[in-house]
Length: 232
Length: 112
Image 1 (cartoon, each protein chain N blue to C red):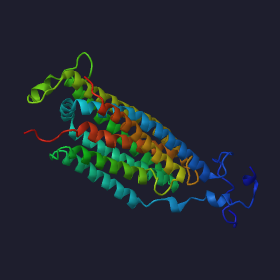
Image 2: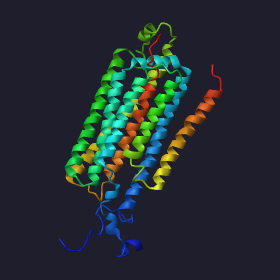
Image 3: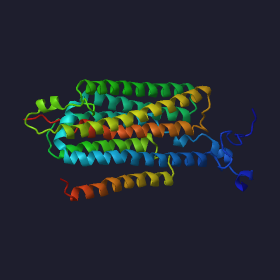
Image 4: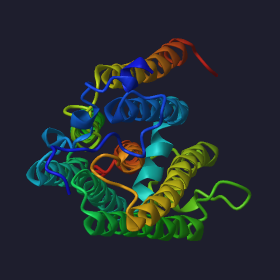
C-alpha cells in the first residue's frame, strides 16, 4: 500500500506486441467480428437456399411451417433472449470485477442454453414421430390430409424439412460449441482470471453467444411463422 | 517498443477500469424487455392475415431485434472502435450481395 496514485505498470495479461490493454481488446474484438462475418456468410448460404426454395415451393413451406410447434419455438426464443441478457450482465459483472456474480451469470447462461437444447430435442422428437425427418422414412401424408385444398408435393415438402433440420441442427451445434466456450469461461472466472483490466475472453465469448442468438431471431420467423393465418 | 519504454506514457491511466464504458443495468433490462415484447408481437401478428405483408412485418421485427442485440448487447454503439463498426456494416453488405445477386439470378430465369 503506497500513497502514490495507481502504480499498476501494466496488466500481466498484456501481450508485449500491444501498446496497451485498450489496443489489445480492440484487436481481439475486431478479430471476433471478422470471424462472425464468416459465420454470417456460412449461415447466409443456407438462408439463401431457404429463400429460393420458399419462393418456388411456397405451399409445402407453409404447410411444413404450420406443423412445427409455435409454442415451443416461442419459448425457445424467449429462453435465448434471456440467455443474451445474462451474458450482457455477465460481461458487465466482469467489467466491474464482480467474480461471484460473473460466475453465477455464466452458469445461468449455460442453464438457458441447455434448456434451449432440451426444448429443441422435444421438437425434433415430435418431427420424428410424424415421419417428418427427411430420408427413406419421410412421409408428408398427415399434411396432405390436413390441407386437402392445397397441393402438397412430398418431395418438395422434404426440402422444407431438410432446410429445417440443417438450419436448426447447425444452430444447435453452435449452441453446443457455445456451451463448451462458456464452460471454459466459467472455470477461469471462478479461478479469478478476469478483472476490470482484463475481461476480453468474456466479452468475446459473449459476442459469439449473442451472434447465435441473432441467428435464432431470424430462424424463428423464417421457419415457424411462414403462414399461421387461419385457413378459410 | 519505444512507446512502451517511455515512462511518461500513461499506460497505467489507460489500464484503469473504464467506468465510462460500463452501461447501466437498466439499459440492458430495457433492451431485454423490448426483445421479449417483440417476440410475442411477432408470434401474434402471424395469425392476422396481412397478405404478403406478413413476411415483411416478421422480417422487420426480426431485423429490429437483431439491431438491438448488435448495438447494445454486443456493444457496437458505445464500446467499439470505428474499424469494428465498419466490419459490421461490411458483413451486412456482403450478406445482401449474396442474397440479392442470387435472387436476381433465380428470379429472372425460368426453371422447369
